[in-house]
Amino acid sequence: QVQLVESGGGLVQAGGSLRLSCVASGSIQRSNTMGWYRQVPGKQRELVASITSGGITNYADSVKGRFTISRDNAKNTVSLQMNSLKPEDTAVYYCYWRATGFMTSLYWGQGTQVTVSS
Image 1 (cartoon, rainbow, N blue to C red):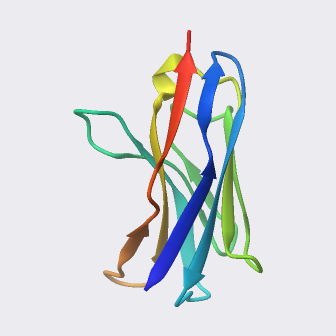
Image 2: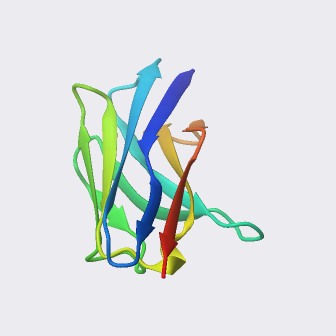
């Protein structure tokens, strides 16, 4: 089992910045991927950004150039720096962790609300 605890989020005006952080604990396999999804009511959860333990990153087209994902393998943490925020970035953001391999379990954080006002 892996437990994820998120911090950050909140209310910000359009054009502003926020930073989300997430720490993983439990049965941490060394080779893994961590990242963030987001979800708005009535829509499917969508991938925002991910980063492997080797440092390979992936971003949704909608956040490229504005969001930066990073991680600290020694501390089992992942962060998402969100700049130039837009009202359409408003969502609940969920941290996730997944071990590398075939059909491995995906673990979720509890979610943190990000609200961008226009």
